[in-house]
Length: 423
Image (tube, rainbow, N blue to C red; front, side, top):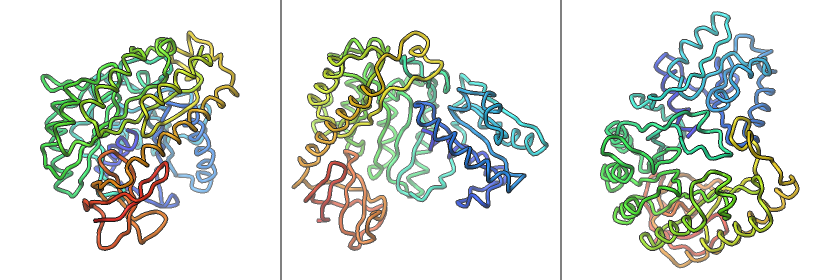
């Protein structure tokens, strides 16, 4: 989502005559687009600002700005703590960046962290300035109103609002005409997309109908409202990828209730069963938090058992860190010792490594369709790309090129990658 926002920012600045540069020494303006979901993300930004401070001493007229969720969460406090910062802009105020930069050029520090109930940037064509000309992101909605106890997103990105569907469909058409072959529809909770009579299942179907050669993905789904209608739409549409990211967070109903996730372990299992029944070849990935407030060893074991029951293909796994301003920070004790969090997280990671390897081993001997994205990082003689299940596949280059669809027979694997040969 931040990557998509960066492309919107680049488009706004490009319209004012600015261009991105790959060389930091050439930059007149450096903007750090930030995330506040975990403390580690914010600490990395603080480290980067320390690095930029020395650069600014050498280049006095360099403008350094902080944008995104961390800007929204910490606001003007950042000016006090980071003296190298010239501007701070929240995720709903990117249109003001040119005016704010002009103010900085006139010698003033400037900020805008006002949240909007309407802003979706639907009229801005993002600047696709990265090297991958195969896949792209389209933001279909902004904000979140789920208010999970541990999460800062509702406070940093504001109320949920859906983007007008025709602007999304037209953007998809334009990207396909420019050569892009895979689009990922983005939202904090795509399942809750609603614009007049357009729900997410209908939007997904319309985007997929742009062209059968266009692959369509989406992220992220919330377990409380992923519908059978959506699952049938995925199952019945060949170019909607058979991959669903469904954050679990915990396998314990007690912990899920304290997290304010608004579903139970049984509800989550029901949705997984529906996915496997309606889309038998669907890959399922997830998010898991280790060591949330009140989590006992029994709760942790329930998480491990649910992981084994689902057999996730992949997972993003984190230990809990308190985020200032959240319900958890206000009302709950961070009462799981740090060493226990680390131990539980390591057990979760070890189990997921086993599950990911088992999942990939089941693909050996299968023929999969791969959309080539890049030359392999390890060898110029190999190409890499993903199949419909979002698994990375590496195979000999031969005469294929980036953007091709290639049938690949899987011959070997690791826990992270499928290996094969084009047929």
